[in-house]
Length: 295
Image 1 (cartoon, helix red, strand yellow):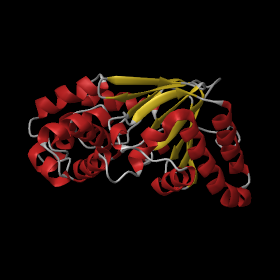
Image 2 (cartoon, one colour):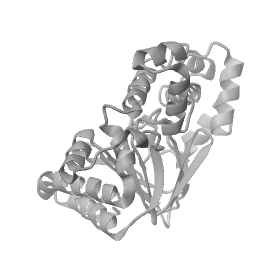
Image 3 (tube, helix red, strand yellow):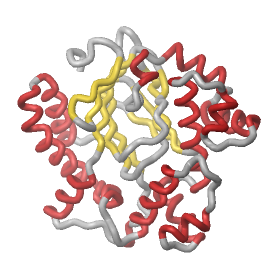
Image 4 (cartoon, rainbow, N blue to C red):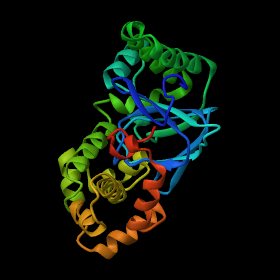
Protein backbone atom coordinates (compact mmCIF):
# COMPACT_ATOMS: atom_id res chain seq x y z
CA UNK A 1 0.00 0.00 0.00
CA UNK A 2 2.94 2.37 0.56
CA UNK A 3 4.00 1.79 -3.03
CA UNK A 4 0.45 2.18 -4.35
CA UNK A 5 -0.15 5.36 -2.30
CA UNK A 6 3.10 7.30 -1.77
CA UNK A 7 1.05 10.38 -0.76
CA UNK A 8 -2.24 10.96 1.07
CA UNK A 9 -5.26 10.13 -1.04
CA UNK A 10 -7.70 7.51 -2.27
CA UNK A 11 -7.20 5.08 -5.14
CA UNK A 12 -10.08 3.09 -6.64
CA UNK A 13 -7.97 0.30 -8.13
CA UNK A 14 -10.90 -1.69 -9.52
CA UNK A 15 -14.60 -0.72 -9.46
CA UNK A 16 -15.70 -0.69 -5.83
CA UNK A 17 -12.26 -1.40 -4.32
CA UNK A 18 -10.67 1.60 -2.59
CA UNK A 19 -7.27 2.05 -0.94
CA UNK A 20 -6.70 5.01 1.37
CA UNK A 21 -3.74 6.77 3.01
CA UNK A 22 -3.81 9.59 5.59
CA UNK A 23 -1.08 11.21 7.68
CA UNK A 24 -3.42 12.95 10.15
CA UNK A 25 -6.72 12.06 11.80
CA UNK A 26 -9.83 13.03 9.87
CA UNK A 27 -13.48 12.19 9.20
CA UNK A 28 -15.51 11.03 6.22
CA UNK A 29 -17.74 13.43 4.30
CA UNK A 30 -19.87 11.04 2.27
CA UNK A 31 -23.64 11.06 3.04
CA UNK A 32 -24.20 7.32 2.71
CA UNK A 33 -22.20 4.18 2.01
CA UNK A 34 -23.08 1.06 0.07
CA UNK A 35 -22.73 -2.38 1.70
CA UNK A 36 -19.02 -3.01 2.13
CA UNK A 37 -16.12 -4.64 3.94
CA UNK A 38 -13.67 -2.25 5.65
CA UNK A 39 -10.13 -3.07 6.80
CA UNK A 40 -7.65 -0.96 8.75
CA UNK A 41 -4.17 -1.93 7.58
CA UNK A 42 -2.33 0.52 9.83
CA UNK A 43 -3.73 2.92 12.42
CA UNK A 44 -7.18 2.85 14.02
CA UNK A 45 -10.68 3.90 13.09
CA UNK A 46 -14.23 4.12 14.36
CA UNK A 47 -17.59 4.19 12.66
CA UNK A 48 -20.48 6.16 14.14
CA UNK A 49 -24.07 5.19 13.40
CA UNK A 50 -26.56 7.11 15.48
CA UNK A 51 -25.52 6.64 19.10
CA UNK A 52 -23.51 3.49 18.42
CA UNK A 53 -19.73 3.44 17.97
CA UNK A 54 -17.85 0.63 16.19
CA UNK A 55 -14.08 0.63 16.77
CA UNK A 56 -11.80 -1.38 14.53
CA UNK A 57 -8.09 -1.76 13.89
CA UNK A 58 -5.67 -4.11 12.07
CA UNK A 59 -7.04 -7.03 14.11
CA UNK A 60 -10.71 -6.42 13.30
CA UNK A 61 -12.84 -5.74 10.23
CA UNK A 62 -16.11 -3.86 9.84
CA UNK A 63 -18.87 -5.02 7.50
CA UNK A 64 -22.37 -3.79 6.76
CA UNK A 65 -25.01 -5.13 4.43
CA UNK A 66 -27.45 -2.28 3.69
CA UNK A 67 -26.90 1.35 2.66
CA UNK A 68 -26.05 3.28 5.84
CA UNK A 69 -25.23 6.92 6.75
CA UNK A 70 -22.06 5.99 8.66
CA UNK A 71 -19.60 8.64 9.86
CA UNK A 72 -16.02 7.31 9.78
CA UNK A 73 -13.29 8.75 12.02
CA UNK A 74 -9.62 7.97 11.42
CA UNK A 75 -8.22 8.29 14.93
CA UNK A 76 -4.59 7.25 14.53
CA UNK A 77 -2.49 8.62 11.66
CA UNK A 78 0.83 10.49 11.43
CA UNK A 79 3.66 11.33 9.02
CA UNK A 80 5.86 8.63 10.56
CA UNK A 81 3.06 6.05 10.69
CA UNK A 82 0.31 6.83 8.12
CA UNK A 83 -3.14 5.42 8.32
CA UNK A 84 -3.74 2.81 5.61
CA UNK A 85 -7.19 1.39 5.01
CA UNK A 86 -9.26 -0.31 2.35
CA UNK A 87 -12.91 -0.65 1.47
CA UNK A 88 -14.45 -3.29 -0.77
CA UNK A 89 -18.04 -2.68 -1.85
CA UNK A 90 -20.01 -5.91 -1.67
CA UNK A 91 -21.80 -6.88 -4.89
CA UNK A 92 -25.26 -8.40 -4.22
CA UNK A 93 -24.91 -10.61 -7.32
CA UNK A 94 -21.68 -12.15 -6.01
CA UNK A 95 -23.13 -12.58 -2.52
CA UNK A 96 -26.21 -14.29 -3.98
CA UNK A 97 -24.13 -16.60 -6.20
CA UNK A 98 -21.88 -17.71 -3.34
CA UNK A 99 -24.81 -18.23 -0.97
CA UNK A 100 -26.60 -20.34 -3.57
CA UNK A 101 -23.50 -22.43 -4.33
CA UNK A 102 -23.09 -23.08 -0.60
CA UNK A 103 -26.78 -23.99 -0.26
CA UNK A 104 -27.33 -21.23 2.31
CA UNK A 105 -30.19 -18.77 2.60
CA UNK A 106 -31.26 -16.08 5.04
CA UNK A 107 -34.34 -17.30 6.88
CA UNK A 108 -37.22 -15.07 7.91
CA UNK A 109 -36.28 -15.56 11.55
CA UNK A 110 -32.95 -13.84 10.90
CA UNK A 111 -34.47 -10.67 9.45
CA UNK A 112 -33.67 -8.62 12.56
CA UNK A 113 -29.92 -9.30 12.48
CA UNK A 114 -28.22 -5.92 12.73
CA UNK A 115 -26.77 -4.85 9.37
CA UNK A 116 -23.41 -3.67 10.78
CA UNK A 117 -20.80 -5.68 12.64
CA UNK A 118 -17.17 -5.61 13.82
CA UNK A 119 -15.41 -8.94 14.12
CA UNK A 120 -11.91 -10.33 14.59
CA UNK A 121 -10.06 -11.04 11.34
CA UNK A 122 -9.32 -14.71 10.77
CA UNK A 123 -6.22 -15.87 8.90
CA UNK A 124 -8.09 -17.07 5.79
CA UNK A 125 -9.93 -13.76 5.29
CA UNK A 126 -6.70 -11.83 5.87
CA UNK A 127 -4.89 -13.98 3.29
CA UNK A 128 -7.55 -13.26 0.63
CA UNK A 129 -7.52 -9.52 1.31
CA UNK A 130 -3.70 -9.39 1.18
CA UNK A 131 -3.76 -11.11 -2.22
CA UNK A 132 -6.36 -8.63 -3.49
CA UNK A 133 -4.14 -5.71 -2.45
CA UNK A 134 -1.05 -7.28 -4.02
CA UNK A 135 -2.85 -7.49 -7.37
CA UNK A 136 -2.82 -3.67 -7.50
CA UNK A 137 0.80 -3.88 -8.68
CA UNK A 138 -0.09 -6.20 -11.58
CA UNK A 139 -2.97 -4.67 -13.61
CA UNK A 140 -3.19 -7.58 -16.07
CA UNK A 141 -3.39 -10.12 -13.27
CA UNK A 142 -5.78 -7.86 -11.39
CA UNK A 143 -8.29 -7.82 -14.25
CA UNK A 144 -8.27 -11.61 -14.37
CA UNK A 145 -7.90 -12.59 -10.72
CA UNK A 146 -9.59 -9.82 -8.69
CA UNK A 147 -13.14 -11.09 -9.45
CA UNK A 148 -12.08 -14.56 -8.23
CA UNK A 149 -10.56 -13.17 -5.03
CA UNK A 150 -13.69 -11.04 -4.47
CA UNK A 151 -15.77 -14.22 -4.52
CA UNK A 152 -13.36 -15.84 -2.09
CA UNK A 153 -13.63 -12.85 0.28
CA UNK A 154 -17.42 -13.18 0.27
CA UNK A 155 -17.01 -16.91 1.01
CA UNK A 156 -14.60 -16.14 3.88
CA UNK A 157 -17.09 -13.66 5.36
CA UNK A 158 -19.86 -16.26 5.18
CA UNK A 159 -17.56 -18.81 6.82
CA UNK A 160 -16.80 -16.22 9.51
CA UNK A 161 -20.45 -16.16 10.59
CA UNK A 162 -21.80 -13.39 8.35
CA UNK A 163 -24.37 -15.43 6.38
CA UNK A 164 -27.40 -13.92 8.17
CA UNK A 165 -26.00 -10.41 7.78
CA UNK A 166 -25.03 -10.71 4.11
CA UNK A 167 -28.39 -12.33 3.49
CA UNK A 168 -29.87 -8.83 3.89
CA UNK A 169 -28.46 -8.03 0.46
CA UNK A 170 -30.34 -10.67 -1.47
CA UNK A 171 -33.35 -11.97 0.44
CA UNK A 172 -36.66 -11.08 -1.20
CA UNK A 173 -39.19 -12.70 1.11
CA UNK A 174 -38.24 -11.42 4.53
CA UNK A 175 -38.69 -8.02 6.15
CA UNK A 176 -35.13 -7.08 5.23
CA UNK A 177 -36.16 -6.68 1.59
CA UNK A 178 -38.84 -4.22 2.65
CA UNK A 179 -36.38 -2.32 4.83
CA UNK A 180 -33.91 -2.14 1.92
CA UNK A 181 -36.72 -0.75 -0.22
CA UNK A 182 -37.54 1.78 2.50
CA UNK A 183 -33.88 2.86 2.63
CA UNK A 184 -33.99 3.45 -1.12
CA UNK A 185 -37.16 5.51 -0.65
CA UNK A 186 -35.52 7.61 2.07
CA UNK A 187 -32.37 8.13 -0.01
CA UNK A 188 -34.38 9.45 -2.93
CA UNK A 189 -36.56 11.73 -0.79
CA UNK A 190 -34.46 12.66 2.24
CA UNK A 191 -35.08 16.38 1.64
CA UNK A 192 -38.84 15.91 1.94
CA UNK A 193 -40.81 15.83 5.23
CA UNK A 194 -40.80 12.33 6.67
CA UNK A 195 -44.15 10.54 6.44
CA UNK A 196 -43.83 7.20 8.19
CA UNK A 197 -47.32 6.04 7.21
CA UNK A 198 -46.56 6.65 3.53
CA UNK A 199 -43.27 4.70 3.63
CA UNK A 200 -44.81 1.84 5.61
CA UNK A 201 -47.63 1.61 3.08
CA UNK A 202 -45.13 1.81 0.21
CA UNK A 203 -43.21 -1.22 1.52
CA UNK A 204 -46.28 -3.16 2.66
CA UNK A 205 -45.75 -3.06 6.43
CA UNK A 206 -47.65 -1.78 9.43
CA UNK A 207 -46.27 1.39 10.99
CA UNK A 208 -45.22 -0.39 14.20
CA UNK A 209 -43.69 -3.31 12.28
CA UNK A 210 -41.82 -0.93 10.00
CA UNK A 211 -40.39 1.01 12.96
CA UNK A 212 -39.29 -2.16 14.74
CA UNK A 213 -37.59 -3.85 11.79
CA UNK A 214 -35.99 -0.64 10.49
CA UNK A 215 -34.28 0.04 13.82
CA UNK A 216 -33.35 -3.61 14.35
CA UNK A 217 -31.48 -3.70 11.04
CA UNK A 218 -30.02 -0.18 10.74
CA UNK A 219 -29.64 0.71 14.46
CA UNK A 220 -31.52 3.95 13.67
CA UNK A 221 -35.15 4.99 13.64
CA UNK A 222 -36.38 6.22 10.23
CA UNK A 223 -36.26 9.80 11.55
CA UNK A 224 -32.67 9.37 12.81
CA UNK A 225 -31.67 7.81 9.49
CA UNK A 226 -33.12 10.73 7.52
CA UNK A 227 -31.57 13.29 9.87
CA UNK A 228 -28.11 11.72 9.62
CA UNK A 229 -28.35 11.63 5.83
CA UNK A 230 -29.41 15.28 5.74
CA UNK A 231 -26.60 16.42 8.02
CA UNK A 232 -23.90 14.50 6.16
CA UNK A 233 -25.10 15.86 2.81
CA UNK A 234 -25.12 19.39 4.26
CA UNK A 235 -21.58 18.84 5.51
CA UNK A 236 -20.50 17.68 2.06
CA UNK A 237 -21.95 20.68 0.20
CA UNK A 238 -20.47 23.13 2.69
CA UNK A 239 -17.05 21.53 2.28
CA UNK A 240 -17.06 20.84 -1.46
CA UNK A 241 -19.32 23.63 -2.80
CA UNK A 242 -18.41 26.28 -0.19
CA UNK A 243 -22.07 26.73 0.72
CA UNK A 244 -22.94 28.68 3.88
CA UNK A 245 -24.63 26.86 6.78
CA UNK A 246 -28.10 28.39 6.40
CA UNK A 247 -28.25 27.61 2.67
CA UNK A 248 -26.88 24.10 3.20
CA UNK A 249 -29.44 23.38 5.90
CA UNK A 250 -32.27 24.62 3.71
CA UNK A 251 -31.00 22.57 0.74
CA UNK A 252 -31.33 19.31 2.70
CA UNK A 253 -34.76 20.02 4.15
CA UNK A 254 -34.25 22.11 7.29
CA UNK A 255 -36.55 25.13 7.53
CA UNK A 256 -35.08 26.56 10.74
CA UNK A 257 -31.32 27.39 10.78
CA UNK A 258 -31.18 27.11 14.57
CA UNK A 259 -32.53 23.54 14.48
CA UNK A 260 -30.04 22.70 11.76
CA UNK A 261 -27.10 24.08 13.78
CA UNK A 262 -28.27 22.26 16.91
CA UNK A 263 -28.59 18.89 15.15
CA UNK A 264 -25.31 19.42 13.30
CA UNK A 265 -23.38 20.12 16.49
CA UNK A 266 -24.94 17.09 18.17
CA UNK A 267 -23.75 14.78 15.37
CA UNK A 268 -20.36 16.29 14.53
CA UNK A 269 -19.39 17.87 17.85
CA UNK A 270 -19.01 21.44 16.55
CA UNK A 271 -21.03 24.16 14.84
CA UNK A 272 -21.13 24.01 11.03
CA UNK A 273 -18.68 26.89 10.66
CA UNK A 274 -16.11 25.48 13.09
CA UNK A 275 -16.50 21.91 11.83
CA UNK A 276 -15.90 22.84 8.18
CA UNK A 277 -12.91 25.01 9.12
CA UNK A 278 -11.49 22.07 11.08
CA UNK A 279 -12.09 19.63 8.24
CA UNK A 280 -10.33 21.89 5.75
CA UNK A 281 -7.17 21.76 7.83
CA UNK A 282 -7.28 17.95 7.94
CA UNK A 283 -8.45 16.75 4.53
CA UNK A 284 -6.07 16.50 1.58
CA UNK A 285 -7.56 18.16 -1.58
CA UNK A 286 -8.71 14.87 -3.13
CA UNK A 287 -10.64 14.01 0.05
CA UNK A 288 -12.63 17.23 -0.04
CA UNK A 289 -13.67 16.81 -3.68
CA UNK A 290 -14.10 13.06 -4.13
CA UNK A 291 -17.48 11.37 -3.78
CA UNK A 292 -15.87 8.23 -2.40
CA UNK A 293 -15.13 9.49 1.11
CA UNK A 294 -12.29 8.34 3.31
CA UNK A 295 -12.08 4.57 3.65
